Length: 340
Image (cartoon, rainbow, N blue to C red; front, side, top):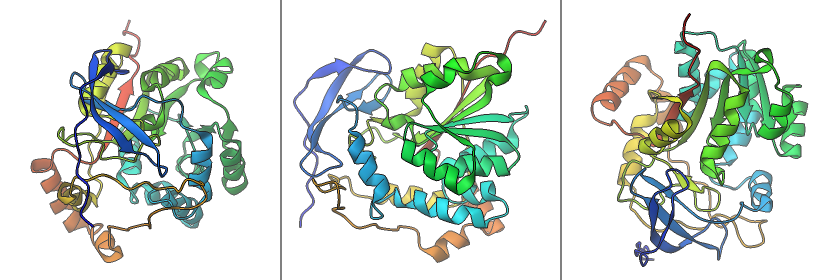
């Protein structure tokens, strides 16, 4: 069947949630994550951000995603949670699975200050918080899902709390109880108000502390919503998006180097993918998937990417020829007090 192509929407404007400037509607009735749902897509040309305007994502959609084994992309989280306890160095294991975790691993390996006390927000199945503790850090994971927290505690130990940032702030009253690092992997694109999320993290940070974010990278401006269908993803961020956010919140900003070994193949694959409308993932009953899982990385190719000489060649090409990659790693730092 011939693939349906994008058709631009009639011009309409809303205020951009990131920078406050006018954002233009670039697509009307974009297919949503669930069959027969549609969303309008907006783009801000000032901060280079795409987003939807919609109420909170219904909790039952997330419940369906985490209860089904057929959901593309999310099935891998269960795999990590099941496999990670078999490894003597679970943090290193995670760093080799995908770039979001490689960002964190690389950042902590290269940090020139001690970042011992760590908070993971949206800890989900709990494997990253577990891996950080096994690597010698004092890590706590929080999640608003009682079910996820209970499963994580039963599987990995008492590293987790059923809490949101507001509740946690009430129990974080002095510098000793604050965190050196707050991590949110693949979370910020899901929330209604990303700026407010980051703002809520700031009181939990020690002076000079960091917020580490990973998210899909919007770097080809002509594309429309090449990320998970709405409302699962509500934002598609660019580097410029985070430059604006850092300026608004008076935070120091740096972008993390992405030398994840399998990036060359995934990056080239994304550039060759035709720009066409996505398919909905969940059926209307929220009990079945509408599409099957496709694994783009052959196991042999994946193993090949970890041979040291091949990694060096790949990283050379990444550095000199592919400057933009599919994921963004962002470090936001609370300014330390001036030296006396």
